[in-house]
Length: 315
Image (cartoon, rainbow, N blue to C red; front, side, top):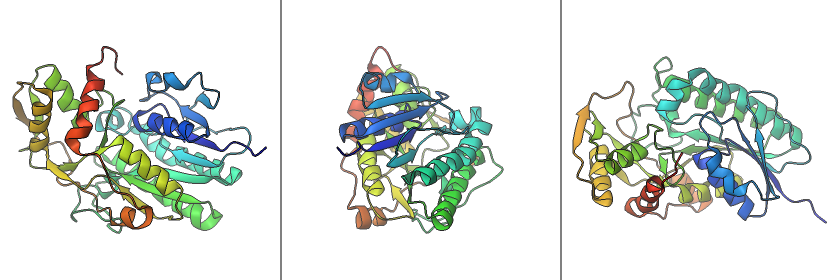
C-alpha cells in the first residue's frame, strides 16, 4: 500500500495557514501543522484536531524541526504578517524569516521534499513601478519600521533560491498580495478587518492620508487555489498571486459602509511611515504558468468575511 502524501504547514493555525490545512486534508494528505501561536489561533484549526490525518505540533520554527517519516511538501507560512504584529514582534519576525526559513529548507533538503515559501508583495516596498511585476527589485527602506518584515521576506527569498541552486532543493516562491476572508483577526491592524470592525461597531472608519493610496484584495479561496497550483507546477522563481482589481482606500471604505449598512463616518489621519502608495499585482506569470486568475469579486468576498466578524466568538 503506498504511503499517504504528507505535508508540513508552518504557521498552520494562522489565517492563511489554517485554510491551507483544510485544503490539504480535503486533498487526502497527512498534515503536520506547526505553530507557536504568537499570532495563530487554535479556533482556526479546532475542527481538524480530531481528524486522524491532522497533527498539531506547537513549535517555534526558529528552533530545529523534527518530523517523523517521509514528507512530500513543506509550505512555510510562519510569520507575523500585519503591521501591528510585526511592529510588536520585530525580532521574532526577522528570526522566522531568516532562521525559520533556514530550518524549513533544511527539512526539505533532508526529506527530499518540495518546498514553497510564502513571500509577500511587501518585498516591493513603496513601489516605483506599477503594477508590480516579479522582475521589479523593489523600493524598500531597510531601516524603517516596516523593514523587519520586508527584509525578512527578501532574505527568505534569497536563501530559498540559494538552496535551490546549490542544494538542488525543489523550491517555489509565492508573493502574496492583500488577501482577506474568514479567520482574519479582528484586531490585526490590516485595512479589511479594521474597516469592518469600525463599521460594525458604529465607529468612524480611519483612512490614512487622503485615502487615494491603492490596494488590491484577493479572497482567500482564490489564493489557496493559486498556492496549490504553484506547488504542483515546475516553476521555481517568484510568482505574484493576488487580485489585480485596484481600489483606493477611500473607495474600499465606502464599499464596506455600503455592504454593512453602517452609518459610520470616515475620518482622516496622518499617513504611516513607508506606507505604500500603490499596490497591484501583475499576474501575467500566474496566468501563463498556473492557468490561474482570481474568481471572487470584492463585494462577493466581503459578505462571508463580514459574517465571520459578526459571530459571537471570534479571534
